[in-house]
Image 1 (tube, helix red, strand yellow):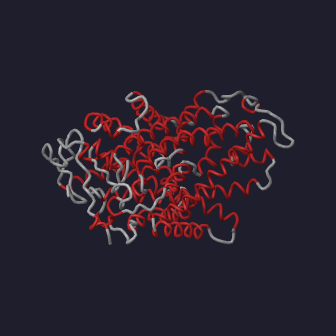
Image 2: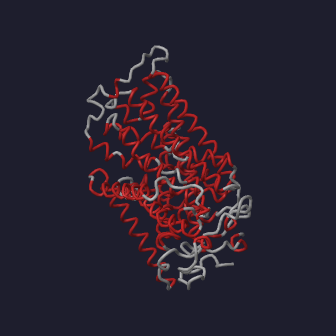
Image 3: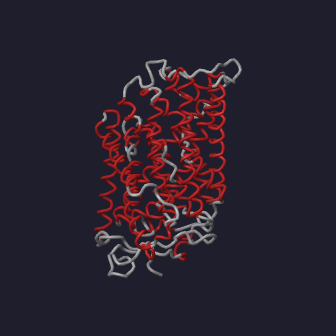
Amino acid sequence: MKGEPGADDTPGAGGVPGGPGASTAEAAPDETGGDGGPGGGGLQNGLKQRHMSMIALGGVIGAGLFVGSGVIIGETGPAVIISFLLAGLLAILVMRMLGEMAVARPAVGSFYAYARLALGSWGGFTIGWLYWYFWVNVVALEAVTGATIIHAWLPGIDLWVISLVLMLLLTAVNMFSVKSFGEFEYWFAALKVGAISVFLVVGLVFLVGLWPGAHADASNLTAHGGFAPEGIGPILTSVIPAVGFFTGAEIAALAAAESKEPRKAVARATHSVVLRVLLFYVGSIILIVAIVPWNDGSVEQGPYVAALKNIGIPAADTVMNAIILVAVLSALNAGLYSASRIVFALTRNGDAPKGLTKLSGNGVPRRAILLATVLGYVSVIFAYVSPDTVFSFIVHSYGAVALFVYLLVALSQLRLRRTLEREDPGALTLKMWGFPYLSWFTVGAMAVVILAMAFLPATRADFLASALTLVVVLCGYLVRRRRNGTGDLADGMPGPSPEPNRGDAAV
Protein backbone atom coordinates (compact mmCIF):
# COMPACT_ATOMS: atom_id res chain seq x y z
CA MET A 1 0.00 0.00 0.00
CA LYS A 2 1.18 3.52 -0.78
CA GLY A 3 -0.68 4.97 2.18
CA GLU A 4 -3.50 4.47 4.59
CA PRO A 5 -6.80 6.32 4.49
CA GLY A 6 -6.55 9.48 6.50
CA ALA A 7 -2.78 9.74 6.10
CA ASP A 8 -1.38 13.19 6.68
CA ASP A 9 -0.26 15.55 3.96
CA THR A 10 3.38 15.78 4.95
CA PRO A 11 5.43 16.34 1.81
CA GLY A 12 7.92 13.67 1.01
CA ALA A 13 11.15 13.66 -0.85
CA GLY A 14 11.29 13.39 -4.60
CA GLY A 15 10.01 10.05 -5.72
CA VAL A 16 8.31 9.33 -2.39
CA PRO A 17 4.54 9.05 -2.65
CA GLY A 18 3.17 12.38 -1.58
CA GLY A 19 6.32 14.27 -2.46
CA PRO A 20 6.92 16.79 -5.16
CA GLY A 21 8.83 14.28 -7.21
CA ALA A 22 5.90 11.91 -7.57
CA SER A 23 4.57 11.94 -11.10
CA THR A 24 0.88 12.29 -11.84
CA ALA A 25 0.94 8.94 -13.52
CA GLU A 26 1.89 7.41 -10.19
CA ALA A 27 0.07 9.89 -8.06
CA ALA A 28 -3.40 9.40 -9.45
CA PRO A 29 -4.12 5.73 -9.91
CA ASP A 30 -7.51 4.64 -11.15
CA GLU A 31 -9.21 4.75 -7.78
CA THR A 32 -12.38 3.23 -9.09
CA GLY A 33 -10.91 -0.18 -8.79
CA GLY A 34 -10.85 -0.78 -12.51
CA ASP A 35 -13.62 -1.75 -14.86
CA GLY A 36 -15.92 -4.25 -13.37
CA GLY A 37 -14.16 -4.39 -10.01
CA PRO A 38 -15.31 -3.13 -6.68
CA GLY A 39 -15.66 0.59 -6.34
CA GLY A 40 -12.89 2.64 -4.80
CA GLY A 41 -12.57 2.14 -1.09
CA GLY A 42 -15.28 -0.55 -1.03
CA LEU A 43 -17.97 1.33 -3.00
CA GLN A 44 -19.85 -1.05 -5.27
CA ASN A 45 -20.17 -0.79 -9.05
CA GLY A 46 -23.98 -0.92 -8.89
CA LEU A 47 -24.73 1.75 -11.50
CA LYS A 48 -25.43 0.37 -14.96
CA GLN A 49 -24.82 2.21 -18.22
CA ARG A 50 -28.53 3.04 -18.54
CA HIS A 51 -28.43 4.56 -15.05
CA MET A 52 -25.40 6.68 -15.94
CA SER A 53 -26.88 7.79 -19.26
CA MET A 54 -30.12 8.97 -17.68
CA ILE A 55 -28.37 10.56 -14.69
CA ALA A 56 -26.24 12.51 -17.17
CA LEU A 57 -29.26 13.42 -19.27
CA GLY A 58 -31.59 14.43 -16.48
CA GLY A 59 -29.15 15.71 -13.87
CA VAL A 60 -29.27 19.26 -15.15
CA ILE A 61 -33.10 19.45 -15.28
CA GLY A 62 -34.17 20.75 -11.88
CA ALA A 63 -37.11 22.55 -10.36
CA GLY A 64 -35.29 25.83 -11.08
CA LEU A 65 -35.91 25.37 -14.80
CA PHE A 66 -39.65 24.87 -14.32
CA VAL A 67 -40.18 27.62 -11.75
CA GLY A 68 -37.16 29.92 -11.32
CA SER A 69 -36.74 30.63 -15.03
CA GLY A 70 -40.00 32.62 -14.97
CA VAL A 71 -38.49 35.22 -12.67
CA ILE A 72 -35.55 36.01 -14.93
CA ILE A 73 -37.82 36.03 -17.99
CA GLY A 74 -39.85 38.74 -16.25
CA GLU A 75 -36.71 40.72 -15.44
CA THR A 76 -35.03 40.39 -18.84
CA GLY A 77 -37.62 39.86 -21.57
CA PRO A 78 -37.10 37.64 -24.64
CA ALA A 79 -33.37 38.45 -24.53
CA VAL A 80 -33.20 35.99 -21.63
CA ILE A 81 -32.41 33.52 -24.41
CA ILE A 82 -28.94 35.12 -24.61
CA SER A 83 -28.56 34.84 -20.81
CA PHE A 84 -29.25 31.11 -20.96
CA LEU A 85 -26.89 30.69 -23.91
CA LEU A 86 -24.06 32.40 -21.99
CA ALA A 87 -24.74 30.43 -18.80
CA GLY A 88 -25.02 27.24 -20.80
CA LEU A 89 -21.70 27.94 -22.47
CA LEU A 90 -20.00 28.18 -19.07
CA ALA A 91 -21.63 24.92 -17.95
CA ILE A 92 -20.52 23.17 -21.14
CA LEU A 93 -16.93 24.38 -20.76
CA VAL A 94 -16.71 23.41 -17.08
CA MET A 95 -18.16 19.98 -17.82
CA ARG A 96 -15.66 19.49 -20.65
CA MET A 97 -12.79 20.40 -18.33
CA LEU A 98 -14.08 18.02 -15.68
CA GLY A 99 -14.58 15.33 -18.30
CA GLU A 100 -10.97 15.62 -19.43
CA MET A 101 -9.70 15.02 -15.90
CA ALA A 102 -12.22 12.28 -15.11
CA VAL A 103 -11.44 10.27 -18.24
CA ALA A 104 -7.68 10.60 -17.70
CA ARG A 105 -7.89 9.81 -13.98
CA PRO A 106 -11.17 8.23 -12.81
CA ALA A 107 -11.23 8.81 -9.06
CA VAL A 108 -13.49 8.49 -6.05
CA GLY A 109 -14.66 12.02 -5.31
CA SER A 110 -14.01 13.23 -8.86
CA PHE A 111 -13.24 16.97 -8.69
CA TYR A 112 -12.25 16.70 -5.01
CA ALA A 113 -9.42 14.36 -6.02
CA TYR A 114 -8.42 16.61 -8.94
CA ALA A 115 -8.40 19.80 -6.86
CA ARG A 116 -6.23 18.02 -4.29
CA LEU A 117 -3.82 16.87 -6.98
CA ALA A 118 -3.66 20.22 -8.74
CA LEU A 119 -4.00 22.82 -5.99
CA GLY A 120 -2.89 21.00 -2.86
CA SER A 121 -4.73 19.77 0.19
CA TRP A 122 -6.41 23.15 0.77
CA GLY A 123 -7.99 22.95 -2.68
CA GLY A 124 -9.37 19.47 -2.12
CA PHE A 125 -10.66 20.30 1.36
CA THR A 126 -12.30 23.51 0.16
CA ILE A 127 -14.00 22.18 -2.96
CA GLY A 128 -15.14 19.04 -1.16
CA TRP A 129 -16.82 20.73 1.77
CA LEU A 130 -18.27 23.54 -0.38
CA TYR A 131 -19.84 20.96 -2.66
CA TRP A 132 -21.18 19.04 0.34
CA TYR A 133 -22.70 22.23 1.76
CA PHE A 134 -24.28 23.08 -1.59
CA TRP A 135 -26.09 19.75 -1.83
CA VAL A 136 -27.25 19.53 1.78
CA ASN A 137 -28.86 22.92 1.22
CA VAL A 138 -30.51 21.60 -1.93
CA VAL A 139 -31.81 18.65 0.09
CA ALA A 140 -33.34 21.03 2.64
CA LEU A 141 -34.90 23.41 0.12
CA GLU A 142 -36.28 20.69 -2.11
CA ALA A 143 -37.87 18.94 0.87
CA VAL A 144 -39.72 22.16 1.67
CA THR A 145 -40.63 22.78 -1.99
CA GLY A 146 -41.90 19.25 -2.49
CA ALA A 147 -43.95 19.45 0.68
CA THR A 148 -45.54 22.70 -0.52
CA ILE A 149 -46.67 21.06 -3.77
CA ILE A 150 -48.11 18.01 -2.02
CA HIS A 151 -49.74 20.19 0.66
CA ALA A 152 -51.78 21.89 -2.08
CA TRP A 153 -53.20 18.47 -2.95
CA LEU A 154 -53.48 17.25 0.66
CA PRO A 155 -54.19 20.40 2.71
CA GLY A 156 -55.18 18.35 5.74
CA ILE A 157 -51.57 17.25 6.34
CA ASP A 158 -49.10 19.68 7.92
CA LEU A 159 -46.23 20.88 5.76
CA TRP A 160 -43.57 19.74 8.21
CA VAL A 161 -45.02 16.21 8.22
CA ILE A 162 -44.85 15.99 4.43
CA SER A 163 -41.29 17.35 4.40
CA LEU A 164 -40.26 14.78 6.98
CA VAL A 165 -41.85 11.93 5.03
CA LEU A 166 -40.06 12.98 1.82
CA MET A 167 -36.73 13.17 3.63
CA LEU A 168 -37.20 9.77 5.25
CA LEU A 169 -38.33 8.13 2.00
CA LEU A 170 -35.36 9.22 -0.09
CA THR A 171 -32.92 8.69 2.77
CA ALA A 172 -34.12 5.08 2.85
CA VAL A 173 -33.65 4.78 -0.91
CA ASN A 174 -30.04 5.94 -0.66
CA MET A 175 -29.32 3.85 2.43
CA PHE A 176 -30.42 0.62 0.75
CA SER A 177 -27.94 0.43 -2.15
CA VAL A 178 -26.41 2.50 -4.92
CA LYS A 179 -28.52 0.47 -7.35
CA SER A 180 -31.72 1.67 -5.66
CA PHE A 181 -30.48 5.25 -6.00
CA GLY A 182 -29.73 4.58 -9.66
CA GLU A 183 -33.16 3.08 -10.31
CA PHE A 184 -35.03 5.94 -8.66
CA GLU A 185 -32.90 8.54 -10.42
CA TYR A 186 -33.30 6.70 -13.72
CA TRP A 187 -37.09 6.94 -13.57
CA PHE A 188 -37.11 10.46 -12.15
CA ALA A 189 -34.80 11.61 -14.94
CA ALA A 190 -36.80 9.69 -17.57
CA LEU A 191 -39.99 11.47 -16.50
CA LYS A 192 -38.27 14.88 -16.54
CA VAL A 193 -36.70 14.29 -19.94
CA GLY A 194 -39.99 12.95 -21.27
CA ALA A 195 -41.91 15.97 -19.99
CA ILE A 196 -39.47 18.46 -21.49
CA SER A 197 -39.43 16.53 -24.78
CA VAL A 198 -43.25 16.58 -24.99
CA PHE A 199 -43.26 20.29 -24.20
CA LEU A 200 -40.73 20.97 -26.95
CA VAL A 201 -42.77 19.04 -29.53
CA VAL A 202 -46.13 20.54 -28.51
CA GLY A 203 -44.69 24.06 -28.30
CA LEU A 204 -43.01 23.83 -31.69
CA VAL A 205 -46.17 22.43 -33.33
CA PHE A 206 -48.16 25.32 -31.83
CA LEU A 207 -45.61 27.95 -32.82
CA VAL A 208 -45.47 26.93 -36.48
CA GLY A 209 -49.27 26.87 -36.71
CA LEU A 210 -49.90 23.13 -36.93
CA TRP A 211 -51.79 22.97 -33.61
CA PRO A 212 -55.62 23.01 -33.95
CA GLY A 213 -56.82 26.62 -34.02
CA ALA A 214 -53.28 28.05 -34.03
CA HIS A 215 -51.40 30.01 -36.68
CA ALA A 216 -47.67 30.57 -37.11
CA ASP A 217 -46.74 33.54 -34.93
CA ALA A 218 -43.52 34.40 -33.10
CA SER A 219 -44.29 38.10 -32.68
CA ASN A 220 -44.02 37.87 -28.89
CA LEU A 221 -40.24 37.85 -29.33
CA THR A 222 -40.32 41.54 -30.27
CA ALA A 223 -43.89 42.85 -29.85
CA HIS A 224 -43.73 43.97 -26.22
CA GLY A 225 -40.95 46.55 -26.07
CA GLY A 226 -38.54 44.77 -28.38
CA PHE A 227 -36.26 41.75 -27.99
CA ALA A 228 -34.35 43.38 -25.11
CA PRO A 229 -36.98 45.66 -23.52
CA GLU A 230 -35.02 46.13 -20.27
CA GLY A 231 -31.67 46.81 -21.98
CA ILE A 232 -28.31 45.04 -21.90
CA GLY A 233 -27.81 45.08 -18.11
CA PRO A 234 -30.47 42.49 -17.20
CA ILE A 235 -29.17 40.17 -19.92
CA LEU A 236 -25.82 40.00 -18.15
CA THR A 237 -27.18 39.91 -14.60
CA SER A 238 -29.57 37.08 -15.51
CA VAL A 239 -26.56 34.93 -16.35
CA ILE A 240 -25.94 34.61 -12.59
CA PRO A 241 -29.13 32.73 -11.63
CA ALA A 242 -29.10 30.89 -14.96
CA VAL A 243 -25.69 29.37 -14.14
CA GLY A 244 -27.21 27.97 -10.96
CA PHE A 245 -29.90 26.18 -12.97
CA PHE A 246 -27.23 24.09 -14.71
CA THR A 247 -25.69 22.74 -11.50
CA GLY A 248 -26.11 18.98 -11.46
CA ALA A 249 -24.41 18.15 -14.73
CA GLU A 250 -21.29 17.15 -12.78
CA ILE A 251 -23.10 14.40 -10.82
CA ALA A 252 -22.35 11.93 -13.63
CA ALA A 253 -18.60 12.42 -13.05
CA LEU A 254 -19.07 11.89 -9.30
CA ALA A 255 -21.17 8.75 -9.85
CA ALA A 256 -18.72 7.27 -12.36
CA ALA A 257 -16.69 5.66 -9.55
CA GLU A 258 -19.66 3.37 -8.88
CA SER A 259 -20.21 2.35 -12.50
CA LYS A 260 -18.66 -0.56 -14.34
CA GLU A 261 -17.08 1.62 -17.05
CA PRO A 262 -16.19 4.97 -15.45
CA ARG A 263 -14.23 6.40 -18.37
CA LYS A 264 -16.96 5.56 -20.86
CA ALA A 265 -19.69 6.93 -18.57
CA VAL A 266 -17.93 10.27 -18.09
CA ALA A 267 -17.12 10.62 -21.78
CA ARG A 268 -20.77 10.09 -22.71
CA ALA A 269 -21.95 12.55 -20.07
CA THR A 270 -19.50 15.16 -21.32
CA HIS A 271 -20.61 14.78 -24.92
CA SER A 272 -24.32 14.86 -24.06
CA VAL A 273 -24.21 18.03 -21.95
CA VAL A 274 -24.11 20.19 -25.10
CA LEU A 275 -27.34 18.65 -26.37
CA ARG A 276 -29.00 18.97 -22.98
CA VAL A 277 -28.13 22.65 -22.62
CA LEU A 278 -29.06 23.70 -26.14
CA LEU A 279 -32.20 21.60 -26.48
CA PHE A 280 -33.76 21.36 -23.03
CA TYR A 281 -32.92 24.76 -21.61
CA VAL A 282 -32.40 27.18 -24.47
CA GLY A 283 -34.93 25.43 -26.71
CA SER A 284 -37.70 25.46 -24.13
CA ILE A 285 -36.99 29.08 -23.12
CA ILE A 286 -37.23 30.17 -26.77
CA LEU A 287 -40.64 28.49 -27.04
CA ILE A 288 -41.92 30.05 -23.81
CA VAL A 289 -41.06 33.67 -24.73
CA ALA A 290 -42.39 33.10 -28.25
CA ILE A 291 -45.71 31.63 -27.06
CA VAL A 292 -46.43 33.91 -24.08
CA PRO A 293 -45.72 37.66 -23.77
CA TRP A 294 -42.69 38.01 -21.49
CA ASN A 295 -44.46 40.63 -19.35
CA ASP A 296 -47.53 38.47 -18.72
CA GLY A 297 -47.77 38.09 -14.93
CA SER A 298 -48.45 34.36 -15.25
CA VAL A 299 -44.95 33.77 -16.60
CA GLU A 300 -43.26 34.61 -13.31
CA GLN A 301 -45.67 32.31 -11.46
CA GLY A 302 -44.87 29.38 -13.75
CA PRO A 303 -43.54 29.82 -17.31
CA TYR A 304 -44.33 26.30 -18.48
CA VAL A 305 -47.84 26.40 -17.04
CA ALA A 306 -48.41 29.76 -18.74
CA ALA A 307 -47.24 28.38 -22.10
CA LEU A 308 -49.36 25.22 -21.83
CA LYS A 309 -52.44 27.25 -20.87
CA ASN A 310 -51.87 29.54 -23.85
CA ILE A 311 -51.69 26.49 -26.09
CA GLY A 312 -54.91 25.16 -24.59
CA ILE A 313 -53.71 22.11 -22.67
CA PRO A 314 -56.35 21.15 -20.07
CA ALA A 315 -55.32 20.87 -16.40
CA ALA A 316 -51.94 22.48 -17.17
CA ASP A 317 -51.48 23.46 -13.49
CA THR A 318 -51.91 19.92 -12.22
CA VAL A 319 -49.73 18.40 -14.95
CA MET A 320 -46.84 20.81 -14.37
CA ASN A 321 -47.04 20.56 -10.58
CA ALA A 322 -46.69 16.78 -10.91
CA ILE A 323 -43.65 17.24 -13.16
CA ILE A 324 -42.14 19.81 -10.77
CA LEU A 325 -42.64 17.38 -7.90
CA VAL A 326 -40.71 14.74 -9.85
CA ALA A 327 -37.92 17.27 -10.44
CA VAL A 328 -37.90 18.12 -6.73
CA LEU A 329 -37.70 14.47 -5.67
CA SER A 330 -34.94 13.90 -8.21
CA ALA A 331 -32.95 16.82 -6.78
CA LEU A 332 -33.51 15.52 -3.25
CA ASN A 333 -32.36 12.04 -4.27
CA ALA A 334 -29.32 13.37 -6.12
CA GLY A 335 -28.48 15.73 -3.28
CA LEU A 336 -28.30 12.95 -0.71
CA TYR A 337 -26.20 10.86 -3.06
CA SER A 338 -23.78 13.64 -4.03
CA ALA A 339 -23.29 14.94 -0.48
CA SER A 340 -22.62 11.45 0.92
CA ARG A 341 -20.13 10.50 -1.83
CA ILE A 342 -18.13 13.69 -1.60
CA VAL A 343 -17.85 13.25 2.20
CA PHE A 344 -16.79 9.64 1.67
CA ALA A 345 -14.03 10.89 -0.64
CA LEU A 346 -13.00 13.51 1.94
CA THR A 347 -12.36 10.77 4.50
CA ARG A 348 -9.70 9.18 2.28
CA ASN A 349 -7.19 11.91 3.09
CA GLY A 350 -8.25 12.83 6.59
CA ASP A 351 -10.36 15.79 5.39
CA ALA A 352 -13.42 14.35 7.13
CA PRO A 353 -13.82 12.12 10.21
CA LYS A 354 -12.56 8.63 9.46
CA GLY A 355 -15.72 7.13 11.02
CA LEU A 356 -17.63 8.27 7.92
CA THR A 357 -15.54 5.82 5.87
CA LYS A 358 -17.54 2.88 7.22
CA LEU A 359 -19.69 1.15 4.62
CA SER A 360 -22.63 -1.19 4.89
CA GLY A 361 -22.31 -4.75 3.62
CA ASN A 362 -23.55 -3.65 0.18
CA GLY A 363 -21.04 -0.81 -0.12
CA VAL A 364 -23.18 2.15 0.94
CA PRO A 365 -21.65 4.95 3.10
CA ARG A 366 -24.64 5.12 5.44
CA ARG A 367 -23.01 7.38 8.01
CA ALA A 368 -22.16 9.88 5.28
CA ILE A 369 -25.76 9.74 4.03
CA LEU A 370 -27.11 10.40 7.52
CA LEU A 371 -24.74 13.36 7.88
CA ALA A 372 -26.14 14.78 4.63
CA THR A 373 -29.66 14.69 6.07
CA VAL A 374 -28.86 16.58 9.27
CA LEU A 375 -29.01 20.08 7.80
CA GLY A 376 -32.07 19.01 5.84
CA TYR A 377 -33.99 18.15 8.99
CA VAL A 378 -32.76 21.30 10.75
CA SER A 379 -33.74 23.47 7.78
CA VAL A 380 -37.19 21.93 7.56
CA ILE A 381 -37.72 22.93 11.19
CA PHE A 382 -36.47 26.47 10.66
CA ALA A 383 -38.54 26.85 7.48
CA TYR A 384 -41.58 26.93 9.75
CA VAL A 385 -40.12 28.25 13.02
CA SER A 386 -37.92 31.05 11.62
CA PRO A 387 -38.55 31.46 7.86
CA ASP A 388 -37.38 35.09 7.72
CA THR A 389 -34.11 34.76 9.66
CA VAL A 390 -32.37 31.39 9.99
CA PHE A 391 -34.00 29.74 6.97
CA SER A 392 -33.50 32.89 4.90
CA PHE A 393 -29.77 32.84 5.71
CA ILE A 394 -29.52 29.16 4.72
CA VAL A 395 -31.17 29.97 1.38
CA HIS A 396 -28.73 32.81 0.69
CA SER A 397 -25.63 31.06 2.04
CA TYR A 398 -25.18 28.71 -0.88
CA GLY A 399 -26.12 31.03 -3.75
CA ALA A 400 -22.55 31.42 -5.03
CA VAL A 401 -21.12 28.17 -3.66
CA ALA A 402 -21.63 26.28 -6.94
CA LEU A 403 -19.72 29.06 -8.72
CA PHE A 404 -16.82 28.71 -6.25
CA VAL A 405 -16.77 24.96 -6.94
CA TYR A 406 -16.80 25.43 -10.70
CA LEU A 407 -14.01 28.00 -10.50
CA LEU A 408 -11.82 25.54 -8.55
CA VAL A 409 -12.62 22.82 -11.11
CA ALA A 410 -11.41 25.10 -13.90
CA LEU A 411 -8.22 26.04 -12.04
CA SER A 412 -7.54 22.36 -11.35
CA GLN A 413 -7.87 21.46 -15.02
CA LEU A 414 -5.43 24.18 -16.05
CA ARG A 415 -2.72 22.74 -13.83
CA LEU A 416 -3.44 19.03 -14.27
CA ARG A 417 -3.49 19.34 -18.06
CA ARG A 418 0.09 20.63 -18.15
CA THR A 419 1.27 17.84 -15.88
CA LEU A 420 -0.52 15.15 -17.87
CA GLU A 421 0.91 16.46 -21.13
CA ARG A 422 4.37 16.22 -19.63
CA GLU A 423 4.09 12.90 -17.81
CA ASP A 424 1.23 10.85 -19.27
CA PRO A 425 -0.02 12.30 -22.58
CA GLY A 426 -1.61 8.99 -23.56
CA ALA A 427 -4.22 9.46 -20.82
CA LEU A 428 -5.63 12.55 -22.56
CA THR A 429 -8.15 10.76 -24.76
CA LEU A 430 -10.81 13.41 -24.08
CA LYS A 431 -9.44 16.94 -24.28
CA MET A 432 -10.67 20.40 -23.40
CA TRP A 433 -11.33 22.41 -26.52
CA GLY A 434 -8.94 25.25 -27.37
CA PHE A 435 -6.63 24.66 -24.42
CA PRO A 436 -5.38 26.81 -22.74
CA TYR A 437 -7.35 29.73 -24.18
CA LEU A 438 -10.86 28.42 -23.49
CA SER A 439 -9.76 27.20 -20.07
CA TRP A 440 -8.54 30.67 -19.13
CA PHE A 441 -11.68 32.18 -20.66
CA THR A 442 -13.78 29.93 -18.40
CA VAL A 443 -11.80 30.95 -15.32
CA GLY A 444 -12.14 34.63 -16.22
CA ALA A 445 -15.85 34.35 -16.97
CA MET A 446 -16.56 32.58 -13.68
CA ALA A 447 -14.57 35.23 -11.80
CA VAL A 448 -16.56 38.00 -13.52
CA VAL A 449 -19.87 36.35 -12.60
CA ILE A 450 -18.79 36.01 -8.95
CA LEU A 451 -17.61 39.63 -8.80
CA ALA A 452 -20.85 40.76 -10.42
CA MET A 453 -22.76 39.04 -7.63
CA ALA A 454 -20.83 41.13 -5.12
CA PHE A 455 -21.76 44.45 -6.73
CA LEU A 456 -25.32 43.87 -7.93
CA PRO A 457 -27.96 44.74 -5.31
CA ALA A 458 -30.16 41.76 -6.24
CA THR A 459 -27.40 39.21 -5.65
CA ARG A 460 -25.24 40.91 -3.01
CA ALA A 461 -26.91 39.10 -0.10
CA ASP A 462 -26.26 35.73 -1.76
CA PHE A 463 -22.64 36.65 -2.39
CA LEU A 464 -21.97 37.84 1.16
CA ALA A 465 -23.59 34.80 2.76
CA SER A 466 -21.78 32.46 0.35
CA ALA A 467 -18.49 34.26 1.00
CA LEU A 468 -19.04 33.70 4.71
CA THR A 469 -19.56 29.98 3.96
CA LEU A 470 -16.25 29.96 2.06
CA VAL A 471 -14.47 31.65 4.98
CA VAL A 472 -15.87 29.08 7.42
CA VAL A 473 -14.63 26.22 5.19
CA LEU A 474 -11.16 27.76 4.89
CA CYS A 475 -11.02 28.22 8.67
CA GLY A 476 -11.99 24.57 8.98
CA TYR A 477 -9.03 23.68 6.78
CA LEU A 478 -6.66 25.71 8.98
CA VAL A 479 -7.95 23.93 12.07
CA ARG A 480 -7.52 20.55 10.37
CA ARG A 481 -4.00 21.46 9.26
CA ARG A 482 -2.96 22.69 12.72
CA ARG A 483 -4.43 19.65 14.45
CA ASN A 484 -2.53 17.32 12.13
CA GLY A 485 0.65 19.33 12.56
CA THR A 486 1.25 19.49 8.82
CA GLY A 487 1.61 22.17 6.25
CA ASP A 488 0.01 22.26 2.85
CA LEU A 489 1.32 19.90 0.23
CA ALA A 490 4.55 20.80 -1.43
CA ASP A 491 4.78 23.13 -4.36
CA GLY A 492 4.02 21.45 -7.61
CA MET A 493 1.74 18.48 -7.97
CA PRO A 494 0.69 16.94 -4.67
CA GLY A 495 1.12 13.28 -4.06
CA PRO A 496 -1.27 10.44 -4.53
CA SER A 497 -4.54 9.78 -2.86
CA PRO A 498 -3.86 6.69 -0.78
CA GLU A 499 -4.82 3.39 -2.26
CA PRO A 500 -8.09 2.23 -0.73
CA ASN A 501 -7.71 -0.13 2.19
CA ARG A 502 -10.72 -2.25 1.40
CA GLY A 503 -10.49 -4.06 4.71
CA ASP A 504 -10.91 -0.78 6.59
CA ALA A 505 -13.79 0.33 4.40
CA ALA A 506 -16.10 -2.60 4.91
CA VAL A 507 -18.22 -3.16 7.97
